[in-house]
Length: 154
Image (cartoon, rainbow, N blue to C red; front, side, top):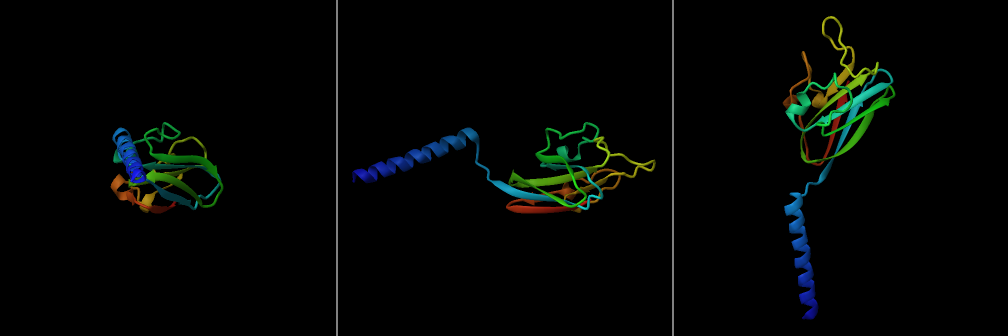
């Protein structure tokens, strides 16, 4: 009888700590795995991958600032060889969109020709099309609720 009371008290104590932690930290979210593959970079250069979880962040103009914007959920910027590259991110479940840019001249700008056609390779999640600017968040959005793989053709 004494052992059963101690076990019951121990379980109640653990439940109380879990409830207090949830109340203080908010509901616990589990990380999901996202693999983002950037395919077909034509030459060795710097590649930027930005994973956004909101239309405001995804559709904002960041190209003139250079570097990774602090409002981006996750991202990578590094020099890669002229072959496909895959990055893995651990994210909470939700809706995300990815923008990928390949900077050959390392100026952190989306250079275009006189007609406004971009000179650099770029791509978006769900291979969303870009006409006169990046696609809307909804066009590139996907749900992350387990293991998602986004294969983006540059």
